[in-house]
Each structure stands twice: as C-alpha cells, then as structure tokens.
Length: 197
Image (cartoon, rainbow, N blue to C red; front, side, top):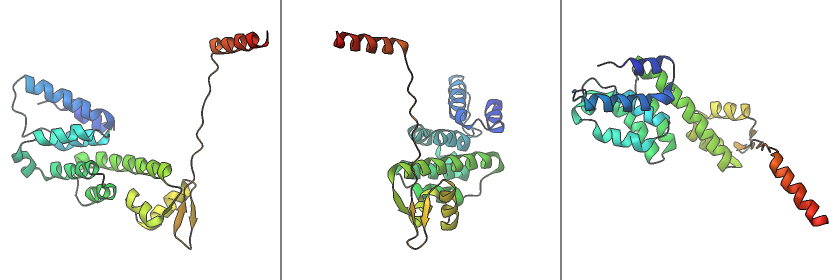
C-alpha cells in the first residue's frame, strides 16, 4: 500500500491536509477491496481529524477501527484519548492525554504541532471569555505550569497582579476595515441630494 502522500504531508508539516489525504486514500483502497486495516496509519489519520478540529469525523473513524488494531496499537488509543477529552470539552485533560504517552518519532512532530495549535486556540478562548482570570485556571487551559503560564500571558500583553495571582486580559484591538464601494458612495450622494432638494 502506498502511503507516500501521507508521508510527504507529514514531512512538509502540511498537517491540515492529512485528514483529507487519508480519507481519500481510505476510500480508494476500500473501493479496490484491498485488506488494509493492519497497516493503516490510524493514529495519523485520527490526529489529522483532531488537528483540524473535526471531532465528529475522528469519532466516526474511531468506531470503524477494528478492535484488534485498537488493542495492538496503543498509539491509536492514545490519540483517541485526546479526541475523547475534546469531545467532552475537558480542556485540561487534552494536555494530560498528550503528556502521558510516549509518542513514536513518526507522529511526535504532528502531536507537538497540534499541542501548539490547541494552546493558541485555548488562549484565544480565554481572551474572548474573560476579563480577569487566575493564573491557576489559565494554566489548566494552556497545559502549562503556573510560571510558564504567567510568562506566556505577560508576553501577550496581559497584566499580572502578583498579590492576588490574577491576570487581567488585554483584549486585542479589532481592526475593522471599511471598503469604500463607489456604487455605495454614489447611492449615498444621490440620497442626500434627494433629501436636500
């Protein structure tokens, strides 16, 4: 079986394309009637769906994986543990699931990229949901220890009150770009002209 496209996507760090590549390849192989379950890169395929935040597809893929594969490939179960935590919205558990498994070299970079992406997503969630938050709670969301969390938040412009150990969120300025459409300007001019005369 030829997994060249998957290996190339991993090598080029095109992680957002891996789920589509694997889905297409799986359909192609299944339509040819080839037995593929034993050698299929299920861990990579599952993580591909999780990486693009397509937890439903990851869940359905998990249900299709034969029990023998789940039992013989612990890395597949470890990736699914990340998916489970996301499914039940146990945000701090995602980081625990990542840390508690010794990932193979083939998938280690992919897991690290997911962790970084997930940390950024959680930071954006905190940014939109809180005006102040404790360092302890922020650390749970970001999967870091409290010192690293404080340092990370300060780098992002947040303010730390050392006495209360609370972080004040610095909201990012939302830049709204208004485009002047000549037809809209013309209609506005005609409307004002009509009102005045």
